[in-house]
Each structure stands twice: as C-alpha cells, then as structure tokens.
Image (cartoon, rainbow, N blue to C red; front, side, top):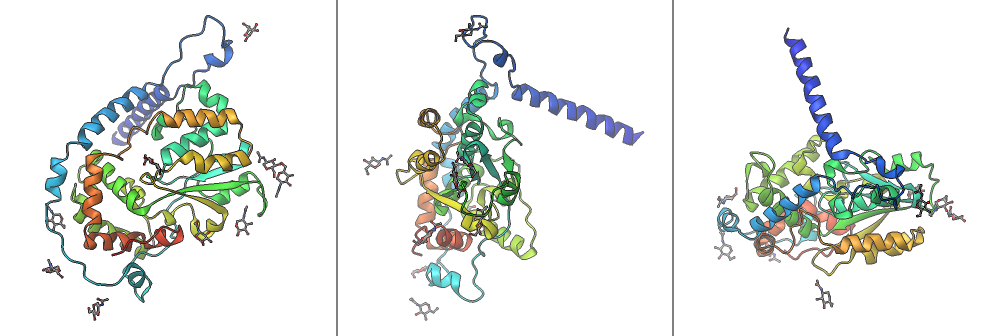
Length: 356
Ligand SMILES: *[C@@H]1O[C@H](CO)[C@@H](O)[C@H](O)[C@H]1NC(C)=O
Ligand SMILES: *[C@@H]1O[C@H](CO)[C@@H](O)[C@H](O)[C@H]1NC(C)=O
Ligand SMILES: *[C@@H]1O[C@H](CO)[C@@H](O)[C@H](O)[C@H]1NC(C)=O
Ligand SMILES: *[C@@H]1O[C@H](CO)[C@@H](O)[C@H](O)[C@H]1NC(C)=O
Ligand SMILES: *[C@@H]1O[C@H](CO)[C@@H](O)[C@H](O)[C@H]1NC(C)=O
Ligand SMILES: *[C@@H]1O[C@H](CO)[C@@H](O)[C@H](O)[C@H]1NC(C)=O
Ligand SMILES: *[C@@H]1O[C@H](CO)[C@@H](O)[C@H](O)[C@H]1NC(C)=O
Ligand SMILES: *[C@@H]1O[C@H](CO)[C@@H](O)[C@H](O)[C@H]1NC(C)=O
Ligand SMILES: *[C@@H]1O[C@H](CO)[C@@H](O)[C@H](O)[C@H]1NC(C)=O
C-alpha cells in the first residue's frame, strides 16, 4: 500500500514541477510562423518571472540600505592576529595554514560554437551575465525572438539550459573536435578580486537573501563567525577529498578550484574583474569577440543590454556592502582568514596580495 502511495505522490509532484517549468519556459513557437511585420502578431510577451525579478530588486534595495540588524550582529570586538607573518610567509611555509591551490571542486562551461568561444562560469564572478551572453551568442535570433533579455535570464529558467553547457573543457574539446593548440578557439574565464567576491557573497547570501533556515554555517549575519567556520569547512573538505558542493559552498569556495583549472589552466584566457575599479566588461570582451568574428550588430545588442543596469541581485554600492568591506578591511584578524582561504587565487590570477 505504502509504496504505491509514495509512487503516486512522486508522479503528482513531478507533473506539478513540469507544469510550473512549462509555464516559465514556453518558447513561443507561434512567433516563428507569423511574419514579423504582419498585423495579426500579438504584442511581445515578457516571461512571467521578470515581474518577480523586479519585485526582488526593490525589496533588496530596501534591505541593503537599512542595516541596523547587520551592524548589531557584527558589533563584537575583534581579536588580534595570532602571527605576524606576511601573506607570502604565512602561506608558503611548511605545513601552512592556507588552503591549497587548484582543487577539483566543480566546473561549469558555456559555449558559443558558432564563434569558437567558451566561458567558465563561477558564481559571484559575473556568472549570470556571462551565462546569458553566451546563450545569446549561441543563437542571437532565437534568444531575441523569445523575448529574453541579457540581464534577466534567471538561472533556474535560463533559456539555454542544458543546450550549450559542459562540465569541463575536456568535454568541449571532444564535442567540437577541437585539435591541440594552436586552434581557433578561445576559452574565457572571468575572475573576480577575491576580497570583493567574498564580500559580495557574504552580503548576498548571509544578509540580503538567506535561503535556508540555519544559513551561513549557522552564523547568520555574523562575519567573524562565518569566516572562521567557512575556512574550517573548506579545509575539512580538502582533507577528506570529498566536496559537498552546497549552494553556499559554490558562492565562496576559491575560483582556482573551478573548471578543472588543475588540468586546463593554460587553455584559459583570464579576465580579471573588479566592480570597484571602473571595470568595463565590454572593453575586455569585445576585442576577443571581434577576433572571433562576432558581428557588430551583436556587440551593439550586448552593449545596449548591459548598459541597462545591473542584474536583479546586484549588491554593490549598498550600505551593507560598504559596512562589511570596512569591517573586513580594518581587521588584520579577518584579513588573515581571507588570505588563508584565497591566497592561491590572489597569486595564480595576479591580484596584489593584501598587506596583513
Ligand atoms: C512578410 O513581410 C515582408 C516584408 O518584411 C513582406 O514582403 C512579405 O510579403 C510578408 N509575407 C507575408 C506572408 O505576409
Ligand atoms: C592587540 O594588540 C594590541 C597591541 O599590540 C594590544 O594593546 C591589545 O591588548 C591586543 N588585544 C587583544 C584582544 O589581544
Ligand atoms: C614576529 O614574532 C616573533 C615572535 O612570535 C618575533 O620573534 C619576530 O621578531 C616578529 N617579527 C616581526 C617582523 O615583528
Ligand atoms: C572556428 O574554427 C574553425 C576550425 O579551425 C575555423 O574554420 C573557423 O573559421 C572558426 N570560426 C571562427 C568564427 O573563428
Ligand atoms: C590545452 O593546453 C595544453 C597545454 O598548453 C596544450 O598542450 C593543448 O593543446 C591545449 N588544448 C587545446 C584543445 O587547446
Ligand atoms: C583558423 O581559421 C582560419 C579560417 O578562418 C584558418 O585559415 C586557420 O588556419 C585556422 N587556424 C588554426 C590554428 O586552426
Ligand atoms: C560573532 O561570532 C563570533 C565568533 O563566533 C563571536 O565571538 C561573537 O560574539 C559573535 N558576535 C555577536 C555579536 O554575536
Ligand atoms: C572611472 O574613472 C574615471 C577617470 O579615471 C573617473 O572620472 C570616473 O569617475 C570613474 N568612474 C567610476 C564609476 O568609478
Ligand atoms: C600573471 O603574470 C605573469 C607575469 O606577468 C603572466 O605570465 C601570467 O600570464 C599572468 N597570469 C594571469 C592569469 O594573468
């Protein structure tokens, strides 16, 4: 009796999920049949979830600028550092307390075979924008024809889901029969400054929008507690050789642990990215795109779309972000924890190490 019921439940929940999925993900096939200029065409239908995104954005802004709760959770006095070693001394000594480089955590690659381009996407390093940009470049007409917008192609309903996605470069090489270098492909990886990525992750996941009950290692909004426990979490998983890959881990674990860089480091073109240094993503990407014959009309579309603003979950320029930045930057104790986590990200990607 019981197993039958369970099966039934499973079938029902599957169909519910399927129905919701379809609701979000309809591809509007009518459009391709009707002449675009004919008068019978319906006005463009914006995907329903765009409304949710706009709501989320407004709520976020309120929260990010009303930060009393955040200040309260971070009012404790911070301890002194336990050592007086510099970052390099600390992390290159024998039995260093710093995390190792280049572990096999996880990889996500998006491709645009039309232009011989691929990109490794890493949470909190422009992953949303890069994912929709490569979806667009996979087939510009289809993307626009389905009323998708670059800054709004939400992760769980993304238009190219499973269509241009790989786990590592090996899969890309094989699928497109890419010969050993030199060849006509460029594999891009956006790498964000580790300090900025961490702060952005903390503000987003531990303050703006916690998704689980005991969020951020049970530390809530407490930065000290989160940094101490997160470093431990990373260290333990490296030691055990088994990554749990939780939602939170994906937003904090080092960037050099992604996309099988231990194997494919030399096949990537890295673009260092920082929102605080007047960074223009297009000035870095477009020269590469031009080399790969991406037409000017597509570059224009990207340029226009990106200038429309930041993605719905952007956290920069908020009071919460500057508070956490300051709290971290002014504490040698916390900066030492940051260095222990991300020393190799700083070194491998040529970021200047902080003075601690
Ligand atoms: C479709 O539109 C074009 C103009 O863009 C027009 O020349 C053509 O006759 C139209 N075809 C139909 C079937 O309406
Ligand atoms: C930290 O170091 C300063 C100066 O070295 C000292 O005055 C202070 O008492 C120390 N604080 C703690 C909590 O150990
Ligand atoms: C660091 O601390 C050790 C003792 O813990 C001391 O011998 C050494 O002189 C200190 N170095 C610097 C640069 O302050
Ligand atoms: C992609 O690579 C193939 C094979 O090397 C080459 O023939 C083609 O011109 C390249 N296309 C672009 C857009 O770079
Ligand atoms: C990847 O990089 C390695 C080392 O530089 C090189 O030997 C290999 O040909 C590259 N593979 C591709 C497909 O570019
Ligand atoms: C790249 O593609 C061009 C044609 O677009 C071809 O002439 C050239 O040999 C290719 N280069 C490599 C290294 O495959
Ligand atoms: C934050 O966490 C640290 C370390 O776990 C703890 O010592 C401190 O008391 C906490 N701060 C507050 C305000 O709870
Ligand atoms: C970018 O840099 C220019 C000159 O270096 C400066 O005038 C401008 O305010 C900066 N913009 C931002 C957003 O930081
Ligand atoms: C870091 O700098 C070195 C020396 O300038 C350069 O050879 C290397 O390609 C750079 N690495 C990255 C990831 O930019």
